[in-house]
Amino acid sequence: MLAVYFDCPGGPENLYVKEVMKPHPGEGEVLVKVSASALNRVDLLQRRGKYPPPKGASEILGLEAAGTVAELGTGCKGQWKIGDAVMALVSGGGQAEYVTVPEGLLMPIPKDMTFLQAAAIPEAWLTAFQLLHFVAKVQKGETVLIHAGASGVGTAAIQLVRLAKAIPIATAGTQEKLKATANAGAAAGFNYKTEDFSEKVLAFTQGLGVDVILDCVGGSYWEKNLSCLRTDGRWIIYGLLSGGEVHGDLLARLLSKRASIHTTLLRSRDKEYKERLVKAFTEDALPYFTGGASPHLQPLVDSVYPLHEIAAAHRIMEENKNIGKIVIEMPAPS
Image 1 (cartoon, rainbow, N blue to C red):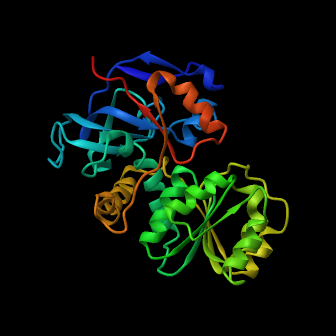
Image 2: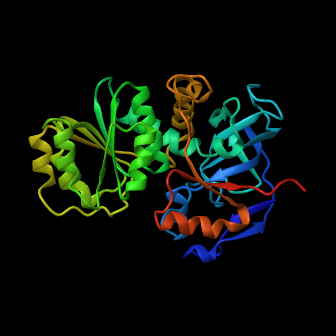
Image 3: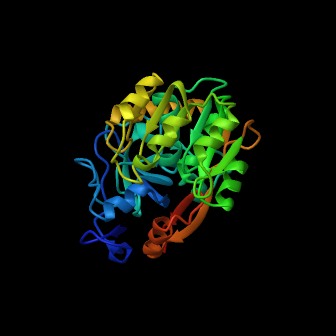
């Protein structure tokens, strides 16, 4: 089968498509014929040698896939059959023609949704769902500040906050991206490059601040985050795009607000945790992707690249040009 590969860490130019052995499903696993995958920041970090895959995971890039069930391993419980249209969260291996997936990490593709759209769901939407419900435990009526609001996770989080009957507000770096956050349902959006988002957030919340912050930026935002975090608020860190160093009296500021910091990652979680997450998302959110559901959830696809143009896709994400998800399309069967 064909798969994305790189021989040594470095830039996008190191990526190429290589013929590798097709995997075989193990106990309780399903083999998926991949039609589409998608790009995540983790793929860029792994390509640079800064985020190795978890022990036992495929070294092939790709944390999500959409396609059809091709083979069932021994011990599968019968919830899937060959030919089923599925999407999956994987720890690696998604950017290949086939990938093996524990059966509990598969989800049915919503009716009338294409593989290209479905590939944009698993990693971003499960991350956002985890942040909001497993970590922040968001409540009806709360206000949630979402950094990188036009990203795959950001646009998913905005919609899921609305679904939870809470109020999403977002930051982004261009007016075009802020427009995308508004289209996704953000009640307000602030350009972090041209305005002080903490002042704008305090004005929006009439001085109270937000109940929850979803932060993938890290170090450079700490003072502004704490300035606009409400007393007893929850600051959820799930990425460090600006680095992890903090210069200043973080703990005293945090203590004065009785606020809490939670950190979380998804890829390194064990299978049982991921299965609980997939089950909760499938039950509580997935029905809203079907046409006619209200509110209607929808993945935002920025662009689609064929597998052999994977390096170009990486460059677009590295330059922060995408709004929503960059999807990778597998070659059509010959």
